[in-house]
Length: 81
Image (cartoon, rainbow, N blue to C red; front, side, top):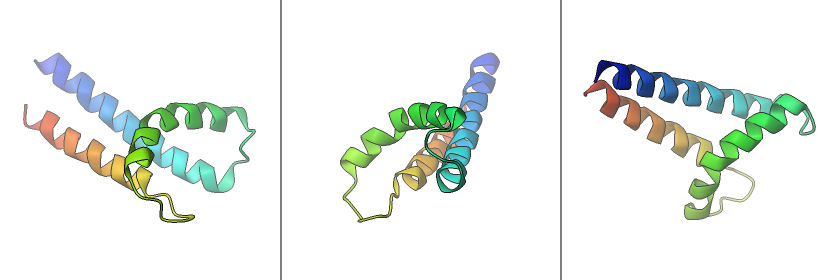
């Protein structure tokens, strides 16, 4: 159980860090930059289902905030194992 807990915790932390990088890169890095394309491709797989459920708020995209909350809740569940 210890290995699984550590693995899940690292996976959730890495995803949270990548989400933060995704948000920062969306402001400052051009869309055709190869690293941004890779990060966008990975994160959009997680964000698209949330975007389909959430209502449209115009130019504001709150799906990264929702995903961060979900990741933090999952981290708490893993920590209690």
